[in-house]
Amino acid sequence: MRVVTERIPTLKSVTVGIWVNTGSRDELPSQAGYSHFIEHMFFKGTRSRSAAEISREIDGLGGEMNAFTTRETTTFYVKVLDQQLERALELLSDLFHHSRFDPKEVEKEKQVVLEEIRMVQDDPEDFVQELHTAQVLGRHPLGRSILGRAETIRRLKREDLLAYIEAHYDPTQIVIAIAGNFDQRAMDKLVARYFGKTRATSNPSTPVRRPPIVKGGVLVKQKPLEQVHLCLGLKGIAAGHKDRYAVYALNSVLGGSVSSRLFQEVREKRGLVYSIYSFLSGYSDVGTITVYAGTRAKEASRVVDLVCREIRRLSSKGVEKKELDRTKNQMKGSLMLSLESSHSRMSKLAKDELIHGSRTSLGEILSHIDRVKPEHVYGVGRRLFTFDHLAITGLGPISSRSLQAHR
Image (cartoon, rainbow, N blue to C red):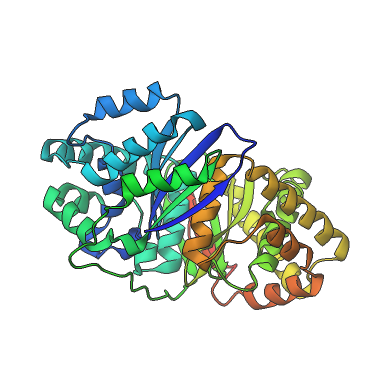
């Protein structure tokens, strides 16, 4: 395992994360949802602790323990006061190495995950984004829901989950990231004690990932809702791409903040939406840029038209220096505020290691942002903001015909 640490003596907390370099994109179609299901099962009892005892113990430490699954990683973490670090590490190690995967608990958890799938389908903002991802990335594993499909969840067995762990949870694919207030020498000993004997899998599977083809088109799913929920998507860049800071700025100008063009034009000036924003999805080999908006059915076509107009303006005219300077200040402020907790520092450490293979300091990131010039933003906008692969997804009381004109 790789171990990356950052000591921050001004904090009273410490966060430990175990990041496994496997996610929903590494599953076969018949395994859809396994990574996420495994994440759930690590909290359902070990050889020495029941699920209830695990919950009581972390509450007794006054800490927080949780996990999350993305399309490329599975993460387990614990955040505690610095004096509780050893007990927290022992607990996290017990879950990671000795979870039982009791067949009765597996059957029970199937119902929990099926409810989670239903919950996403009942949240139109989440659901339209899932539909949009599937539309843009097609049958590629990245296009599948992280939660999996109901039929694969109902069919899975304990042996399937253990076989998946055996294939994907090799120490070479695991990063332990630790940030907060700790003594480095003591920490080294604790990590060696609780994680130093992690055995290699007998038949490890190094992720072999092929990039998807980003697709365009119009997809509408009719549903009796009060609003129409929209996603417009374009091809972006991979997470570690050299132009990422210019793309961060481009996204911020488009719809990444309350001073962005879309928020000001569509919400503040015209009052057509309550929520509108853009965001980047960056994976190891591909990325997307997505705009989300929720509006009345009769205004959906107009909102799409306004979004397309702003995309064209950025593509053809770029940004002025004054607008870019304001955006860069907002980016730097947001970055520095986001890194004020041990949890966010832990996440940054792990992502740096998994994406770049080395740490990028806060000073280096701020320097990269400062070096972004209007011509850089114009260049990436010209390249990415083309309508060849524009994808439009609508959810609600709307027909596809009303969105086709924008293609």
